[in-house]
Length: 313
Image (cartoon, rainbow, N blue to C red; front, side):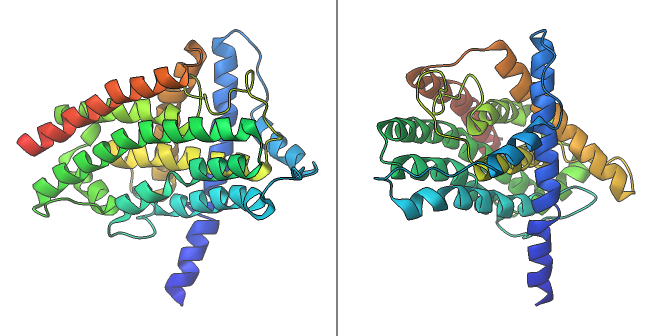
């Protein structure tokens, strides 16, 4: 019973739930502010994502007459819940070891696509042709960026597994602990291609330019953004950035948990600025065929290079 209560608290308060949501919304605010400054605009206030959610919560939910009502309403809840669970699996080095420490890398791989699947379900359940178009685009994008992610996770698991004699290590806690002694994988020459592939994976999975094809606000009509989708996106921001830190740069700098927590958040912020903010500030939008070919040719090949090197050396 105690373990169940602790698990619920970790999903609802820390590192998931309130903490992950606060960090995700802060990062989204900083992302928009920095992007605006790079484009010589003033930009919105840091709390603009929170204000957007508050405004959305006051709006009426419009459901098309021909929509599948239950699926249409459940989709954002499923996406939000999936990310709330995901956030609890992310270890914060020196602070929290993760909700489940055996095979959690595979669990995260299966849970991460849930927001994209929720968007596809909601769009297809709307019975709108625009929803069907968004469904097909989101599905192609998900297939494109999930392939390099799987190779990245396998490369990390195999490298740590070979070093520890376990064959393949799928525990994030074990991967983090091994790096505390052996050094960050992000500085290992064998894993640098995988790190670059992960940096390219981030804008695709977050749906930011140039990989925001499924939304395409200027080309395809889009219904009111639901607050739960926005909350789920903020949680996913924390999850994918935290996962990147755990995989490649999990080192701590102090024996005090508050210092390590600040250091973890700072590394997540640097990862966001490098892989999301700078990229979308300097690029336009790809077509869906261009985005798919790009992911097949660049991050997939980079991740495969690391995977082959880990297997061969």
